[in-house]
Length: 182
Image (cartoon, rainbow, N blue to C red; front, side, top):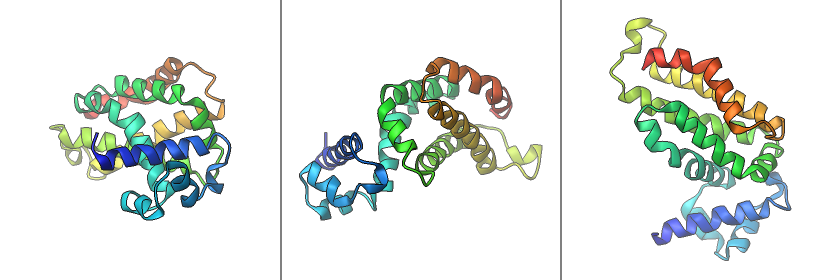
């Protein structure tokens, strides 16, 4: 692992550790750097703020492991892997969700949107040929909103519904439509 990656991981683990006993909104950059045993400027060499770090955690822990599936247009399998990995970090997600300010919703939406956009951009279909309003960005945002909504409802239910049931619900609600675009 490269030194910069190990620093990113150390900062991420620091934030996760702090969240076991502090609300996200109360955690400062100083708290994160003290826990990670790095100086404050090191944090800013890697991340803009704690929200940027949270984006990085979500991408690295939940989107990146699914990227091969996403690239192969296996979106349900990718979503299933994301949800299962989130289920493993249940306490972390429940704490982030309770932090307020739609922090988790924003992070999930951006990550899902970017992943779907990548798939759409690699497909051969010209969406504008179907309808001038259809753009890759519009479709990606639509499905990212759906994914975020379903996951958010699951989290509001304390993630007590099995992850496979969440994926099945999402598939029934939305995936039959996205497959028409791919």
